[in-house]
Image (cartoon, rainbow, N blue to C red; front, side):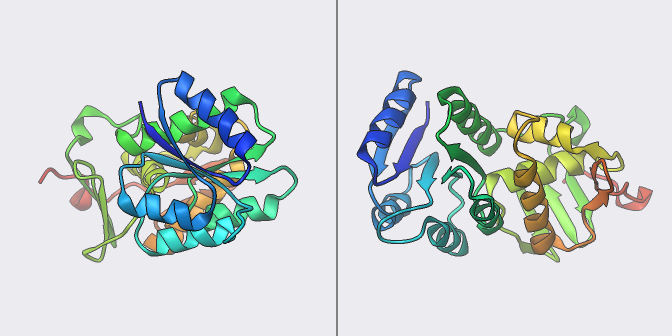
Length: 236
């Protein structure tokens, strides 16, 4: 069971989404505008927020930017109007974890919420026993798998939950080229309809960690190159 914040000024949509989530055992809190949402998120205790882009007081994209810039890593899923790919891409670039287009199928929304919650609460699927608790050095980046923390040149790098999940899956499979479909399936729980999400998350990781950490395998997917023997994963 999760505590979900629904940020939308359409009371009918809020009622439908809240009813859907409560039937699945989730707790729901609603906010009609960006300022109310900001206060709720500042208070803490929210597991995930569903955020409409078109809010009455502040653009939803600006709110995402402000939250992430202020260090808030609460998982965020954007609710967007179909036919606005530029807004979807910008929202992901600013730090949203995923997006769902309106009108949406209830099961699609629930699946996306569950995928983001799973990745923000548990280690990425595919981690092997011999890497549990390890420190992975990908100079200038270090990934602490036990603490779920990432450092660049010794400084902590704030990653949103899905950014971390993507990096961890690539890092624990380093040396192996991973297809976009496999990455989407393991990180977002589906191999359909989230290719833009994957592309924007890789771009964000590159901006935070360096352009050379993740390599594009043209026409296939992505790769973190294998480590030299001297810098392989070690235990603390």
